[in-house]
Length: 175
Image 1: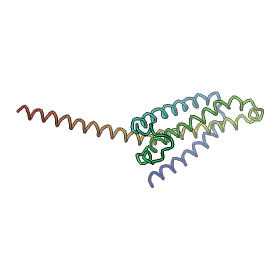
Image 2: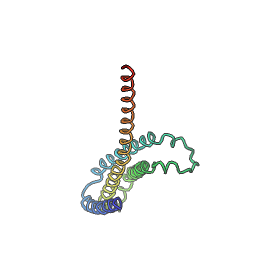
Image 3: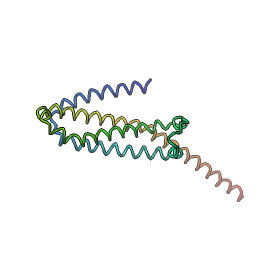
Image 4: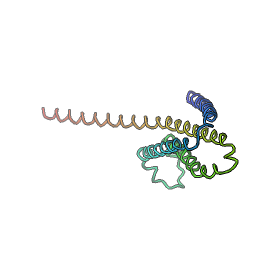
């Protein structure tokens, strides 16, 4: 219930931010917006790579499964929590790539040139929406990151206890 409330609140605040950004973004030329799109693309690519690496580390045997296997083990192991940030970053990357290809063509249409503020506004609203979506992706990727850290800390503590037991055992044998 708490998670759902947080999600709904984030979506409501995001919607307000998108509307406000769209309104004020009408004065921001696309040439000034594009570096922000590029930065967002870079961020999405980094998250994609990092979380992909986490998946490979956490679920090494899942990467070797055949596509037609539907045993559900990956879902039971919690791979979905790791996969969501990858999927969201992929969506962000695809949208930015599409905008990058079509924006130079679209801005040449007479209708767009006559309504340039409307299209700047729409572009800035899209940029804001994608940025907030990517921020959400970063936030949800913290859970799996904390999980990996906790597992690593546990493994280190177990290894340290085993090492200490061996060391103490060798001292007792020396006496």
